Image (cartoon, rainbow, N blue to C red; front, side, top):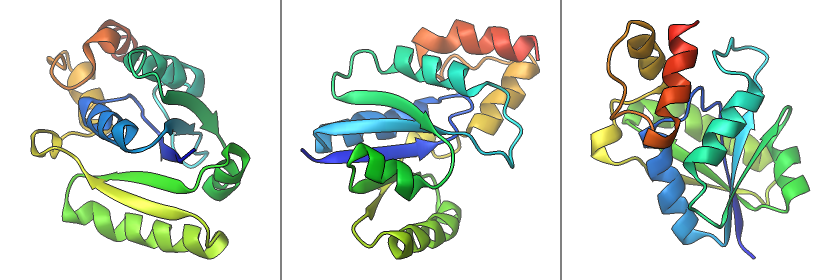
Amino acid sequence: MKIAVYPGSFDPITNGHMDIIKRASRIFDKLIVAVVRNPNKVATFTVAERVELIKKAVKDLPNVEVDHFEGLLVDFMRKKNARVIIKGLRAVSDFEYEFQMALMNRKLDPNIETLFMMTSYKYSYLSSSVVKEIGRLGGCIGELVPEVVLPDIQKKLINS
């Protein structure tokens, strides 16, 4: 079974993330969307909230699992018996950092590959940070996040 992991903070999940998830789920037997708890970042949504939002958003994708981890991605990959890391890229500016991380992950475990996927052009401007800023200011985020989780995200952003 070919298992891939799509790691990220997903704070919150966006339609750009969903674009990558749907496309990667067609390539692999199993795709694990892995919410990382990064102690260096202050998140708006808790890890548990992010996991639940993603589970709602991917409920119609039978080969997609949602999990979370802390620590090294390669350790999580080994635990899940996964061999491929999926990384979404919006623009060339994302590539430099992601390329560096891919090389470091390969150094830590030469059996793990990284697959870069360009997001659809219609989401190239989209980030979780933009969603949070617009949502907190009362702007419409309806076309930016999965419809099924829109009320949950709006409620959290308005109250934060």
